Length: 313
Image 1: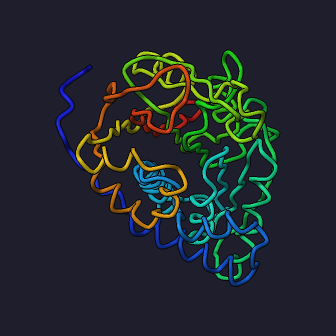
Image 2: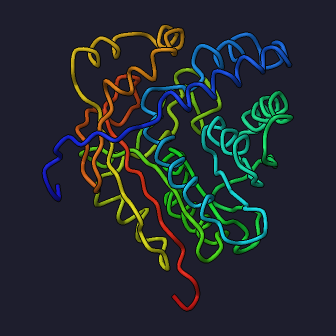
């Protein structure tokens, strides 16, 4: 640990993102009915941000992206690339900013779901959204195409011995000089490549007893090796570690089942305030997990922002 992890809470803008997600979910119901299916349609209302752990990531990526867009000097429309992230965040950017954002995912149903949600709100949005199925390890875009490229809690799920590093190199390749690269990944005290029962590619259901690769949980050293070092020609603007406070609320919440947590999704903004804390720097967050993913795993997040240097920088 580089220094003691003294508590220094950042303001995470929980209400801003929760309100947008809730409004999108309600508008989707009014415009599209149950086109997404009963469970998903209601889930967009009861749990518009799918976990209290997401708010620090929304805040960090949003703050960095909004600052970059507000100081955008070119006359061309900013182009933004989302690699597999929760689509509510990309829709938020498209709704509020005059950008062209490419929302991508390796999972076709996730892309289609985002298309349906955008269809419900795009008449009031400022931006343009392009949807496509993409493999983060082999993005189908030319070099230096985007002004911002980001990926929220996705890189760790990319399969292959170096799937995470390959994805980072691809995002850097398609980013323009002077562009902004934003990535978040989980962090704990031990490097683990976790499996999960019943899911392949972190999304597709398979036989319940099938054990498939799910994610990597990094340490500061392995994040440095697999994430930071593979994006040469960049300047690290900011790095923040988020961790969970282990208090009575935390212990009560982790005992609830997944379905109950979904029904109590309206509490996620409150839980974020009560259970998330953060500090600038890269630290091994307090953790408790094994090689098989569990809903009760405990770990934190690393959040990075880089600027791609110009050719003569």
